[in-house]
Amino acid sequence: LILRGSLEDGVRESAEREAGAIAARLDQGETVDLGQLDDDALYQVIVDGEVRQRSANAPSTPLARDDDGPGAVRIDDERFLLGSEDAGGGALVVVGHSAEDAQETLRAVAALLLVAVPVVVLAVAASSWVAVGRALRPVDRMRREVDAVSSANLGLRLADPGSGDEIGALAATMNRMLDRLDKSQRAQ
Image 1 (cartoon, rainbow, N blue to C red):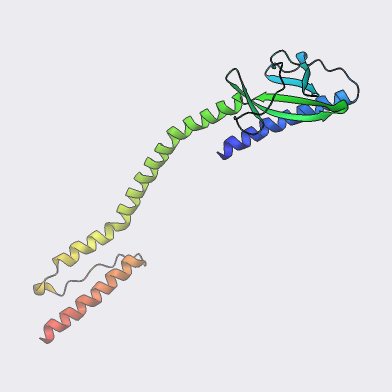
Image 2 (tube, rainbow, N blue to C red; image 1 turned 120 degrees about the vertical axis):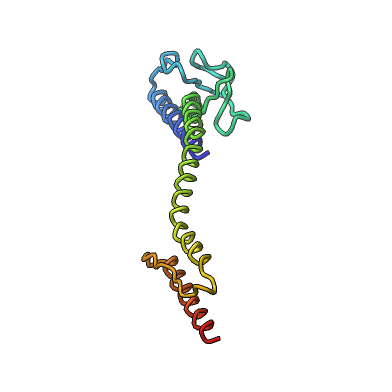
């Protein structure tokens, strides 16, 4: 959504700049042949609600915003983003740039995400599995050592993993517990 908004804002700003440039030329009294401009864009000069000049691909009725979003129209199944600028003499210059390039970019990004997101999720899951397995390996070893302790061999102690982390603290705590159990059994 952010990318779509950014791309469409860029297209709309481009249309606004072009409308401003055409309006400035008209204000200076220049004649602008809208048919000689970009074929992928729509151009209209509207005076008093009537189209006075237009490009060949622009409709003969004034471009008006429709339900395709703010500053957008759909003509022949193609979406155009509009920019406009007031020119002298009550004229309004309207420029519509095709949103097709933005849509193609969005489709390309969506396709990349459809491939990349599952790959990234699988990579994260696999690396998490390996990391958790390595992190819990000392706990599993300690579990097996504690399971081997019985009343007949209370003198067994857990090997210190030497990690200096919570696993090492757990091994030290369990060894102190085994010491207390061993002392208690000898006292009995």
